[in-house]
Structures are given as structure tokens and as C-alpha cells.
Length: 256
Image (cartoon, rainbow, N blue to C red; front, top):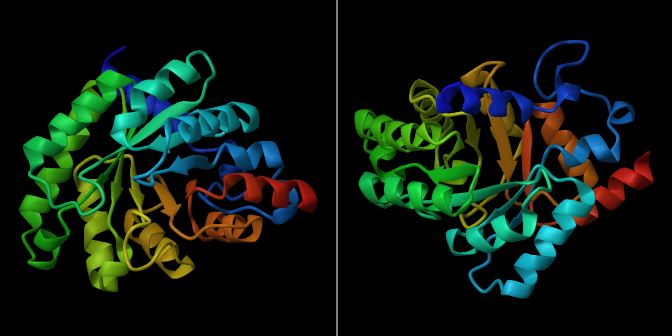
């Protein structure tokens, strides 16, 4: 099997089965039908603070093992440690590229991607060239994304594209999603968590309309409760990035 085929298979596995029940449309579920265990398979357990210590990263990994989160999402400098701590656990490792501004040359983004994957990353969340998008230099935006996507897929990794929705008009959000889809990305993602705003239901619904039913959408930034999480999934999200994952899981258990 080619590395790209493995990537497609991995991407399909990372769309939780519950979101395709009954209607077959991503993100459609009822509160009563999702268990805490199922909810965990939506969550990238996230710690991207610049001052995160080794002890905090180790705790993040232990929590991900315990709860069965899809991945831990960390800065590139922590990928190798996570790979050591999570070996054999089934928890993936997500890292970030061109983060958080997206204002990095494409070849540097590709190098960051390759290094992160070499260190053990299984998923990459890259930030688009926001200035190029706003300048309507769509070819540059598309190729920037496509280059990172190729690097990911050549090594069997998933690529998510952060559009930093809070900086964009609705038309720009739609265009960014379309460019990411054209470039072959596996997911589009709302936010870095470092911009002027995080995920909103409006943005998730708009992004779902833009990419159609079969592309992943990651909602991230400001998602702190079980209710927030379920609302985002209902709106169309197939992955949730959260640093408040344990609080979300407590809410899920209370609701069940």
C-alpha cells in the first residue's frame, strides 16, 4: 500500500463512526447518542502554550492514554517526547507548522513538516498564508497548502489547514476552504487559538457548506465545555481541538 493510500485510510479512521449514523452527514448526532468514549475520539488533546514544561507535556500524554483521545496536539519541540511516551498507545501525535501566523515561506513549512513527522508526528496542522489570501493571490495560497499536503501524504500523515477564521470575511473563509480542498488537505481547521477569536458555530457551518460532506473539519479555540463540543459536532465538526478536554469529558459523563 502506498503512503498516500495509508494516509487516506488513516483519515477515514479518524472520522468518528457516530457522525455518519442515520443521515450519513458529518457532524449530525443527538446528545443522547454520543457516549464519553465516543466523544473522546473527536478530541485532539491540546497544549500549545510556549511555556509548556516537559512535566506538563508528560501529563498531557498520560491523560490522552487514559481517556483515549485521538491525538495530543503539541508544538514541534515536544513531538519526540510525545512519541516516546505514547508508543504503542494508539494515540496519535499532532504538531503545528507555520504556527501561529502562517507567515513562513513554503519551503520552511515543508521542512518543519518533514522534521515533525521524522520525530513522530502523525498529523500536521498548518497555518495558511493569510496575507496572500487577503491579497487574492490564490495560486500562492493553494501551492503553499499543496506543498505541505504532499509532504504529509508522502509520509502517511494527515494534513489539517488552519484558516484563522477570526481574521477573515465570510467570503474569504469560503475561499480558503475551497483552496484547501483543491490542494488535497484532509481537514480545514477554524483557528490557531492565538488569534483574535476561536471557533464559532457560524464558521463551522459555513466551512461545512464550503467543503461538502466528505472533508474533515476541526473546530478549535475557546471550546471548553461538553455543550460547546456537542454543538460544534452538530454544526459539522469532525474533530475538536481543546485544552479543556478533561472538563469536556467530565461533562460528557455527567450527561450520560
